[in-house]
Image 1 (tube, rainbow, N blue to C red):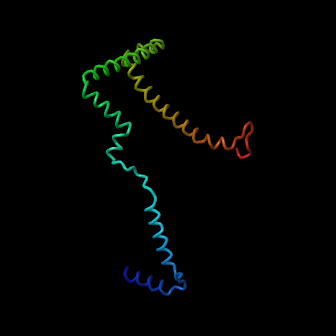
Image 2 (spheres, helix red, strand yellow):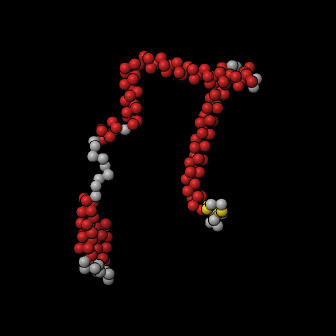
Image 3 (cartoon, rainbow, N blue to C red):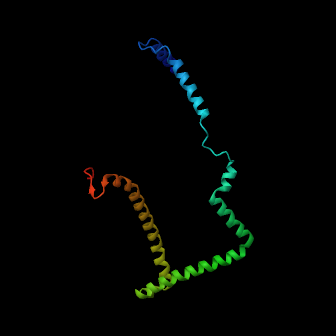
Length: 161
């Protein structure tokens, strides 16, 4: 059935009143040949270096390799330093939270358990607010050129709503 329909369409196209220009095929093939030659002349945007060399030259790769080297060389010392730093940060954050709880007279709710509960609520809220602030500033930066193009020195153009 599909073959018969295709043959009917071919027969209708062959008897069409609209004939293609005589030089259409030659013109199209010449344009394809020109495009192929132009593509061969344009320099490649891909770096001639192998991907391994580009990856090794990437700053993130260099930093990761340096940290891995430090861990392999002085792993125990790095673990001691990391533990000391994280302990200091935790005590500073915990101390400030405990002080805030004591000032608010909420400390009687359970001491460290209350601090942990409040921290588990506040930290995601702060993370969400920082993300929302980032998105807001991103929108402001995108709109700044548009607003600057509509505002002249000291006056506002008539295109602003």
